[in-house]
Length: 395
Image (cartoon, rainbow, N blue to C red):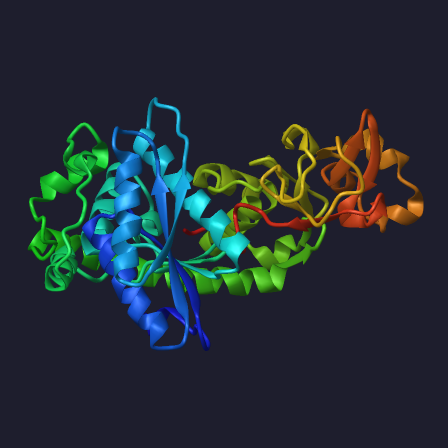
């Protein structure tokens, strides 16, 4: 755990707990770690409501944790049935837990993926044609808007976690979908024929993930250096880019991909071939980002539709409102070309018109009454918090 720190005195951590063996073991370990340092841990138990008895399982998990002196909260997640339910449940669960971390001021969220999960992830991504970044598997530490996501068990085989629970006299819950071959990940797990996670196949996949992770770290360092030389980001969610300093090599491609992901607010990076073509042209539009005249900014036409302006509202995957609003019934949406042209010259801060058009504005009827990033109009605040996170194309 200490390798993922520092955590400072009295760390306040959250841990995702399903009631299964691995997350339950992680909760015990995290509670001991925090208690030894004067801190505490809160277990977040997500009830997906996807099968009968899920509410009872969540309640059982909370009682079991309470019996070990671990506080918990049950988060209800309402997912419609349909395709890719496991993937939607996974992303919805993470979003719900991160939102709770933000609300409670807990800067670390611990997740219980282990060595077998890492092997399964590498195999899954390999079959989908992932590049070296994907084949590095899950990162033990990743920055999200609300908290740092930690996966401290990636090197631990599941058999060791099961042994810990037996020693504690705990009988965990078992999710039947984990043994259902209709789900891709479950089928891959079964194909490895190594439930303990100690066999040669899992070891080989874990070793491959570690090797690719080393290469990923080197590439990230190279990308960071290139961006430091070529990029000048601005707080209004745009950037100046020196094409000559950026270059045309593979590092330049990775750096440009990272910038596109950041400025678009998209969670994933654009296709590599498209980034190479954009780099060769030295400008154009890709991934909802416009590159022209050394300036990269959100393409106004690609901005999301307006959303109700409420504290905490996220618009276009990039901007989040905070604080109180001066009135109710406002919408949060793109300023647009007409709105940008109507701004007083002093309010524009010398920004290019295309940058202004993609900024968030508060709308009353058809009138823009505030542009929070420019501190213009009605008092309101908005932070640039793109889904892409830091300037890094890897997850």
